[in-house]
Amino acid sequence: MQTTTVSATHPAGSSKPYRLRPGLAAVHAKALHRLVPPVYFDDDGYVCEDNSHIPESEVHFPIVSYWHGALYGHYRSRGRLVCVLADHLLLVDREVGTAAVVPDVMVAFDVEPGNRLSYKVWQEPKAPDLVLEVLSGETWQVDVFKKPALYADLGVREYWIFDPREIRRGGPPLEGWRLRAKGNHEPLASMGDGWHSELLGLDLVPEGKSVWLRDPETGHLLPDHAGAMESRDRAEAQRRLAEAQRQRAERERRLAEAERQRALEENAKLRAEIRQLRSGKT
Image (cartoon, rainbow, N blue to C red; front, side):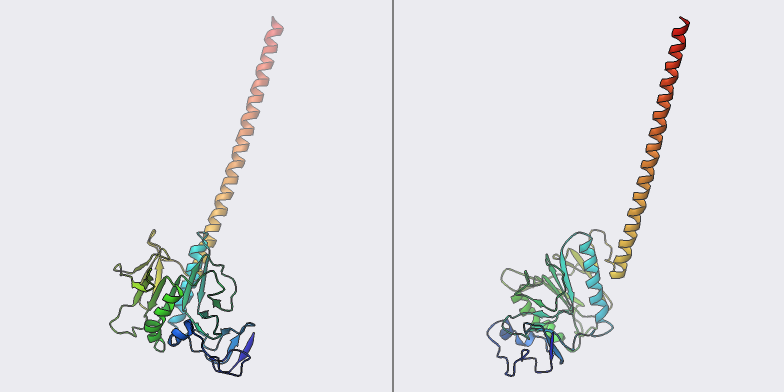
């Protein structure tokens, strides 16, 4: 991996300005992530990391960390393949090595999780299915007004924004849109205490500076990563206990069967001896 402090419009190893070619990078230039030096590039000359990759605040990090762990735990327990990335570079234009956005959370179903330096839409099976952006004072206007069109062009099927700091005074804490056939995102209506994601099969429940994920079938909130691991360990312990009880019951059944068989054999032997005694008398 290479590192450089040149302008974000220069690909690695180039001394000339990188001219944006017609494509998503040109059409959605104002939606792209502004790289903060030092900027790192992979061996193919695509940006894979910059100095902005640190948690934005004590509000931002718990949200993306919860979503990352909760979604992985939820779908893994159901055997569904999913890739969940938090604060990961999403590269949107093959011709422009620095054309990227950094969704707070992106979810792609039927995609291997893997260990990516970046998510390149032209190399992956598909674009992310869902994106969540947590609004901040510095970038909220880009998230609200610029990124939706880019995500629609990429084919992101659901786009959510969460406003934990009430930056948009008077606006709802959470808003969601679903991509329609015409290529635009249609707003999703609130259910009262939250919003439903048809794509995730889960409810999104804003509460203070957090937005929780709820299973509509059980009405329970998804646990965070630590909670998911605890639940997994508890389920495994219960499984082992049940297996031990099953094996003990099987041993007891076999012992009882052996006792029954022995009693039958002794009874048969006794009856045979009685018959012999009777036949001797006659």
